[in-house]
Image (tube, one colour):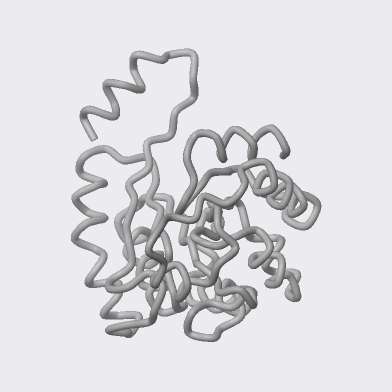
Amino acid sequence: MAFVREVAASRPALAIIVEGVLGPRGDGYVVTARMTVAEAESYHSEQIASLVDAGVDRIAALTLTYPEEAIGVVRAARALGVPVVPSFTVETDGRLPDGTSLGEAIERVDAATGAAAAYFMVNCAHPTHISNALGNPTTADRIGGLRVNASKQSHAELDDAEELDEGDPVVLGLDNAALRTKFPRVQVLGGCCGTDARHVAEIIAAW
């Protein structure tokens, strides 16, 4: 955190938010060691507390596969007084790996936490997969970030792949931009698996 703050201080013209990132407990593609809300809150509290003590501006929890873990993360962050962004991943059908729809997952987290999350994000999924999750208006209203995969393959296919699928950066940018009118509150764009600076440049240009 001290190193990141030093880098940020060297660019005073930029408004830089320093974000502390959590991963899921277990596999980010498959629901394993599923926790209760209380277990998730306890599990993630220690790392969140360390990041808060180090001076983080915000917490993000990426590649979450079921709602209970997200609820635990949000409750832990709220208790420690730091803004938090839970990020779900979705399968090719737009549902979380545990089968919950994205809209239902967001509604459950908000209901259990008093809508304490700053916003929600989706990561580690291709834009065409995310587009399949648009049946619930809550989804569009609460999604503030998209960090997409380069590949259109499923999580299972990516797990079994021998080589990294980089996809097509230009097509990825266009596919991502197609979500713009459907997610009017998006404020964070980025890349996840298989992406690099080329993909992010195309995502920003197309958006």
